Image 1 (cartoon, rainbow over the protein chains, first blue to last red):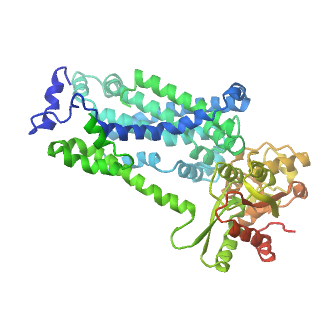
Image 2: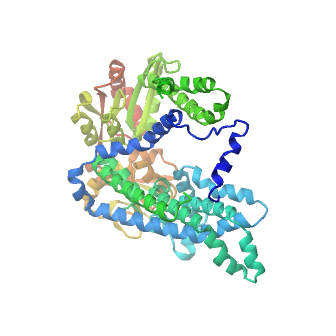
Length: 284
Length: 288
């Protein structure tokens, strides 16, 4: 990791070969890597070129000023930010438990935490509805005791987003905690710092890049959430209709509006990912 | 450099470069080549898949059946069309009917973007018009059934909904279809005609989603098609007089780019036959 060490580190993989196999020889371009890399890049970027090519640039301004669009964008930004805040408050402690403690069934818990990352979001929406809906497992009591019904409210949007986004934060923070040097924590403890002080003053600052990276990922995922939202929170302009839902419904009637909405979502995501990656989230 | 390019750049044969290069480069390069080899193997697998996919789309050589008829149909036709499809296959040996059921607007979009289909059956004339106006239908679309709206309520009708006017009650939570989809357009029309103002809790993306919210008891009522009420679980239908004012005509048309135009004509004739119309009536459609 110190300057000067790279040559020494580069040598072992090529041991026995005499020369370094990993270094690209001068005058030889690594086509074998570049060609598939470029094809891979094209697969990821080309669809957006389609979006740009078909964009109705002339009417883009008036379409963006439509109240439905502003409503959906504002709702998306506020709910995604709220969901990220909730994910940080709940996810960091969860990540700490997974990384720093040992309890029976910890591996199962880790797997459960990651499940929302791989199941289809619409399944998450169905599950949320059956658990927290008006007739759901827990929702029945929320309704009966507190008169609280979650579906079709902005709170349901946030909940759906937390469900799909928090795993990204937990995984990221857990990785950062596992990678951190625990001797600082031990040193702080032997010097008389309490558990809380150690956590706030030592553990958390060490894991900060992981928390930032996880928060950015979670925010981006929350912003793009569609399946769980439309299933659990429904779709009502100004209340539960986020940008992805607006895009989906616009596509049914006016593809041009859908393209404009998509461009906005693309621009917002890109700006945030680029800006944050440069500054805090190098671990992404 | 030049040698490298000629060997590494065999056009369109990624598999060849992956296999050829490590052998030519000697043992030492094997490790460095392992990663791209894996990547290229995946690519070759992808490339290998492509012709197979293309073949299926064309309808030829698709697993056993000699002829495949592709029918794009509104989601509300699912039950009836599947039953009719089985009988059509029996009457036309060697024929396979493949359905693509989805929201009419979505299907129309797919057809206008060049999806390979023989027949399109839409849940309203407005959506069919977008396909006809784009020049993608062969001949005039014909209406083969009609569907009317009904109020779907959870079994036992907990909110005591008796007619359209009850939906305006703020204590009754209502889901409607979004106006972008046919059932939503019909709902807006019927509410407008009846002068009832509803504050829905959600505008669902299609009629089945609206029905599901009723089935789960998340809303007290939803405006859906009569056919969906009949097909739904744990729901009851409340008919209302104003429904006739916004009946949906279902048009069907053979498509201009149909790979199987003759078979497509046969299908259209079949769904308009007396036998088929009976199936539609059983499913809750109105026939003439």
